[in-house]
Amino acid sequence: MGAQQRVYRRKIRSIQSTQKITKAMEMIASSRIVKAQKALESAVPYTRALFDAISAAASHAAGVESHPLTAKARMEKRAIYLVITADRGLAGAYSINAIREGEGLTTLLKKERGFEEVIPYVVGRKGVGYYNFREREMGGEWVGFSDQPDYAHAKEIADQLLERFLERTEDGGADEIHIVYTHFVNMVTQEPRVRRVLPLEIVEEEVDISGGHIGRADNEAGGDKPIFPLYDFEPGANAVLDELLPRYVENAVFAALLMSAASEHAARRRACKSATDNAKELMKTYTRLANQARQAEITQEISEIVGGADALASATAGS
Image (tube, rainbow, N blue to C red; front, side, top):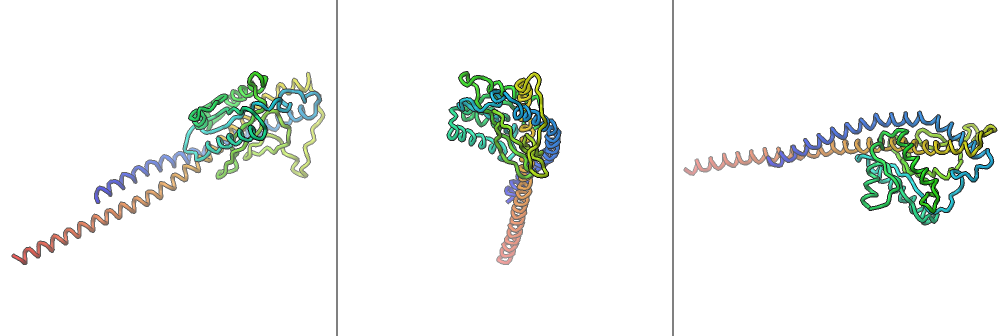
C-alpha cells in the first residue's frame, strides 16, 4: 500500500509540473494572438491601396492581357503552392490540417485540372518534417518564424515564388501559384484555406481582419461594385504592373503569414487550455486513488492490530 501511495504522489507531482508549463504556454499564446491581430490590422490599409492600384491597372487599361502576371495559365503543366505550418508543437491539428489542405489541392490540380506536377514550398518545421519523412520534393523551405513573421520573410518567399513563375514552363517554371494558409475566424475556430495568387484574378473581395482576404469589398450600402476613376499610366500599364504585382505577391504572402501566425497562437492556446484542464482532472483522479490507498493501508493496520490483540488475549487465556 505504501508503494502505491508513493507512485500516485510521484504522478501527481509530474502532472503539476506539466500543468504549470501548459498554463504558461496558454497565457503566452493569448498575448501573442493580440499582437498578431494588430499586425494584421495595420497591414490592411496598404493592402487596400495596393489592390485598388492593381485593379485599376489590370481592369481599366488596354494592353495588359498578355502580361505574364495576369495572363491565364500557359500550359497548366506545373503548379507550385506555399503551405504554412508551425515551427513548434502543442498546437493541436493546426499543422496537419494545413498539410491535408495542400494534399487536397495537389489531388485537385492533378486529377481535375490536368497538371503533371505540383510542388510544395513549405514554411514551418512541422511541414518540412512531414515532407522530408515521406521523401517528397520541396521547391523551398523556411523555418524559425512561423509564429512571428515579418515583411523580410515574406519578401524572401515571394521572390523565390515569382522567380519560379517567370521561368519558362519548359525550363522548370510554374504556371500557377497558390497559398495554403489557416484562416483565423475567432479564438475557437481556425480553417485551412487555399488562395490562388498567380495568374492574378481581379475580383472584388472583402478585406476582413479576421478573415484575411486581400481585396476590396463591394460597397456596403447596396452591394454595387466600386467605381474606379480614369487612369493614365506612365510610361504604360505594363510597366506599372511590373512594379505593382511583385509587391502584390509579397503582400499576399505576408498577409497569409500573419493570418497563419494568429491561427497558430489560437490553436496553441486552445490545445494548452485543454491540456491544463485534463491535468486538473488527472490530479483529481490520482489524489482520490492515493487517498483510497492510504485509507486501505490504515484499515489494514487497524485489522492487524485488532488481530494481534485478539491473538494475544487468546494466548493469555489458554495459559
